[in-house]
Length: 302
Image (cartoon, rainbow, N blue to C red; front, side, top):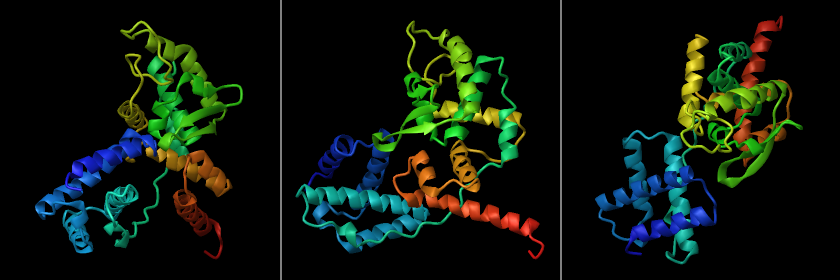
């Protein structure tokens, strides 16, 4: 097909309607594919059907020269493979040249997590007499107590919380929903915030009507990813922790602490909302390291 942008728009519709991917995921696909289109322009490749295996190898070389990590290169190739596979399925192209390309092996990075004493320091910093202090405590308890993603935390609505049985309905990636339990500490923190702090923050809204989102900012509007990150950074400063902590670390900590206490892999996979067990298995490296440290510290023949 001559017009590559027409193909891309066609693919975007497929991702939105058939795959029901989030806007964030779709933007990543667009970025990866448009980067390849720029490469095609430089190499004077006018049509998608003209791309050869040699061209793809040259593209990979340019990515390496631009110092892309193996993870980023894998993502780009995966996006392009899906794009061309879709065009072949729709009979816009005869062949998918990316089927011949193998993905580079990923660097196996062990997820960073917080130790229990570090978590306890964070739990102790919020002023529970203030609306923002109550909100921050509730956010912290929810992130650590459920292991949900920050984006999932932002999207929790009041109706998603079931205090009677202690569960929250989480809207995950690709529109998939799952129920995640939360404990008594999260229950108490959310309840105090909902009945006190949230009401005070909502009263500051310029709009007269309430909205259904659980977590709000200082103006009473739904909180964003950035807002949660800022709140966590402020808590970290107050706790005087020197570690570089990012919100996703609470998800890592949730999984690691569960496995360290004997939880089975399948249950942790379901709680995290991982589509594949391999995504959860990375945490076994952390728990093995934890066991090794215990062994080295306590075994008389270590």
